[in-house]
Image (cartoon, rainbow, N blue to C red; front, top):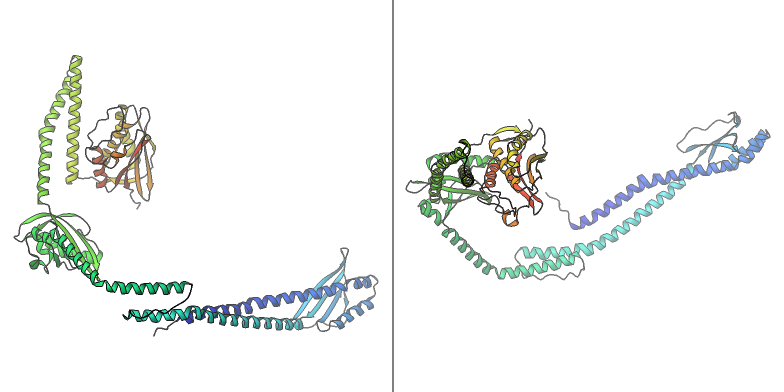
Amino acid sequence: MQLRFGIRKKLLLPLLLGQAVIICVLLFIWQPNQLEKAKQDFIQDQTNILKTLNPSIIQNMLANDLAELHTIFENSQIIHQNEWRYIQLNDPDHKQLYPIFSSKPKDTNTLLKIKITIEENDEVFGYITLHTDWKGAKNKELKNIYQLSIFSIFLFVIIAAFSFILQTSWIFTPITKLKNITSQISKGNYTTTFPDINSNDEIGELSQTFKLMHENIKAYQNNLQGTLNVLENEGKRLRAILDTTPDAIITLNKLGIIQSFNHGAENIFEYNSDEIIGLSIKILMPQDFANSHDHYMENFKNNGESFVVGKNRELFGKKKNGNEFPIDVVFNVKEINNELLFTGVIRDITERKKIDRLKDEFVATVSHELRTPLTAIKGSLDLITKGFNLKLPEQAATMLDVANRNVERLLTLINSILNVSKLESGEVNFMLEPFEIKPFIQNTIELNQEYAKKYSTTFKCTWCHDNIMITADIDRLEQVMSNLLSNAAKYSPKDIPVEISTSIDNGILRVSVKDFGPGIPEDFQDTLFEKFTQSDSGDTREVGGTGLGLSISKMIIENLGGRIGFETSIGKGTTFYFELPINKEK
């Protein structure tokens, strides 16, 4: 049975806890402190009394009048007989002068021992030891302490009771009214009247809020039918959107049973929704995928892993007539009413595949029909200009040089197009291996240093970390570095080195290539990594290029699991960088 802890008990609890704290403080802190203070005061008073005897004691000791000394102490003991139990006088040599025959009293918990030195002008005449009982003073002090404690507790009880009454009046009563009225509203009685709670505090604000909420509920109730009509129309509109979209939108339960099948799916798979809803999604798959379906669903239910959920995949579907065709599919999952619901968007990509085949054929044609004759032309031009040592007329030599440079540009463009095509089609195999980044950077700089001289600049490693290992395809990464270095050299001012550096953040290595050129105009920044894009830097030099280097570099870095980007400032320079994960130490 669950105990109910109401507002009154919650209001009373702090008061009771406060009273308990005050009692504990009085008993265990204040009373001992007061008693100790009274004890120290008693000791000080007795000490002062003894000090008043010092002049007479010194005088009689100097006169060697022991009888008078005895008389002084005996009279003092008579005067203070309620406290003094034993007094002893010793000379500077600790010889006992008083008393002669009486013995020391037994120790009790109220017997105090006070010892003072009899001295004058820094000369010691002896020592007085007093055994005094402070029982009477202690009992008197305890009586005062107990009276004050009882009075304090009684006063707090009165204040607590008064505070509880006020809190009950200010908090419990209006909240009880609100509880009763909200209970009526929760039962559907919206016609009930709100009580007047005249309180200029949070409870009054709460009352006004509940009152406003009550009025809004009645207004919402009156408009509920109109809202339902709007929702119904919205549902029809969404259904119309689903029915008119050309893509197939299919929903499945956790067992892979089809729950909905829109018109786009009917057109793509050639099934009517009535004959497909309630069947397994495997009916829309070729046999190879259907055999693996149950295994994939089981993996997803056990550990959340799936090769389709949340990812775009190119697979094959099967029409009603059994024909297989390529599809682009993405499935997402959402939990509704504690059940998993899979929603798939499927697109027929038969036409796109045809276009891809045409592109591949075009690339093959470019490779065979253009690159081969261009290579032969370049070889012939090289023989004429360099191989035969011919003395050509100046005009002919200039024309041959122009032809040679244009052939080189065409070959570079064709090779770049082929690289892009292979990267996009996934035909490039990446040979991954671990290697140290600093020697790799230094080697790449040496390979491209001659190229930098063409633009009157150099490559300089300003800071490269030692002993940092990454895993990548060295040749492909070298291609990326060469692209970044060549771009930096083209746009770098004369005689100002291009700076190469590395940095590390959270296990990620960043390799940066910084030039101090004109920067990248804002109009080109969003499209810089797209194909055939080149920045107009405003430089007077011909920088050349195909506009494919950065696009190829981006595809290589992303295939290696990294990221590429840049930072630029107009008139100050540009820094291109790529990031790759550092090998974890075993």
